[in-house]
Image (cartoon, rainbow, N blue to C red; front, side, top):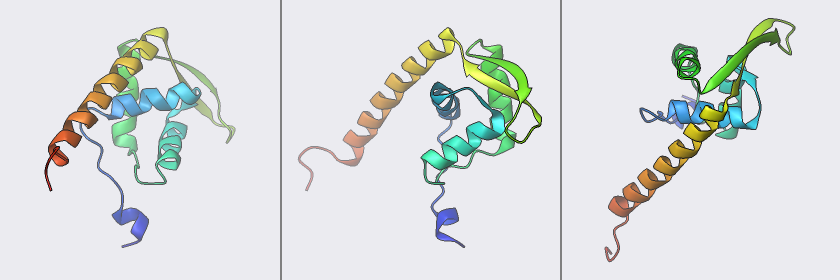
Length: 116
């Protein structure tokens, strides 16, 4: 098995929404582009399957965190482009704060002070 495939990371449940919101903070994008951006930013450690990505995009749009419009993609195909709404930006900020607290909490368990 190639090293890059072996080193892929399973996404913790609940983090996909945050990752999508973060990717759209960089720029509006179509679904496939979001997956490519996340894969590139993680040096291919994360690969979001379309079966997970598109339902998440639809859910985030229903919640009002994303807006979309149909445009022509770089490949000259019709594609639905997503962008963050003001509510999505607020949600991303909350999710990032929660994520940082979670990381700090797990670090305290994994590396307790005073442990040799």
